[in-house]
Structures are given as C-alpha cells and as structure tokens.
Amino acid sequence: TITVNNIAAPSDLSYNETAIVAIVNVTNINSTPTVTGTVSNYSISPALPNGVSIDPNTGVISGIPT
Image (cartoon, rainbow, N blue to C red; front, side):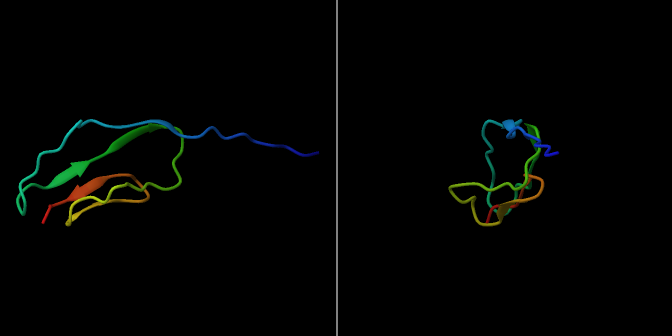
C-alpha cells in the first residue's frame, strides 16, 4: 500500500501593515505575518534595510533600521 499526502502550498501571506515608516536608529519594527497553511522557510527580496531582518522560521520582520 502506498499513501500519498498532498500538502497544499501556503497561501494568503499578509502583514497588518501596508507600509512601515521608520526613523533610523529609533523605530523598533516588529511585524508578524498571518498565513494559511504551513511555511517551511521565509525569505524576502529585495533586502530589508540594515538593522532590520526577517526570521526565516517565523516570518517576523524586526529590528531598528540603521
């Protein structure tokens, strides 16, 4: 017997913010995504400003832009 599980690709990825306005060396960014399904890895392109990063496991964008 062979069982094949078709796992649907994640969809509907979004962040609450449509834009983030930040002050260099002042604003602490912390944005959490919502998504339908399971994501194995998050990445972003183009690169975020220096000092700000995306957690590849959770998709949280955080940091203080430098």
